[in-house]
Length: 118
Image (cartoon, rainbow, N blue to C red; front, side, top):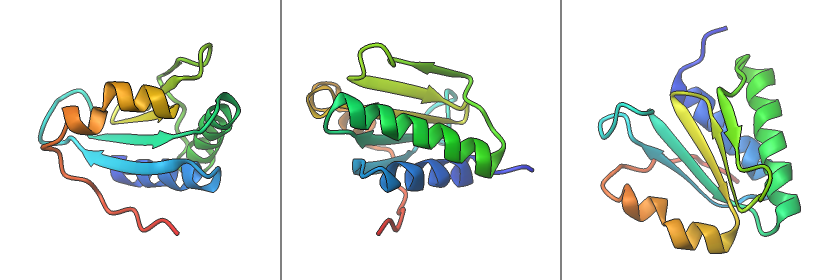
């Protein structure tokens, strides 16, 4: 099963949304950097929710895309967990950490992708 990086990003976004992640943003970095094609950024209100979002993203991407992350960092502190799928990097933040790093502002010239989450 071969999926595009956009399809993988959308599966991850829907998984995060199913765990009530807040402020889900998908940035298209494909023309901005060689590091990856997309950043999926979302917020969990507390450590437990961040943990649940990360677990759901990993489970749904594995089940629907047949892909496991290259790495998953930040599970110890749960203020910023990064799940790296190569072409897609998922960032799950606690609110204060997201406010501090402001990735959307750092990549402000990157277009956002409409996700149509309900």
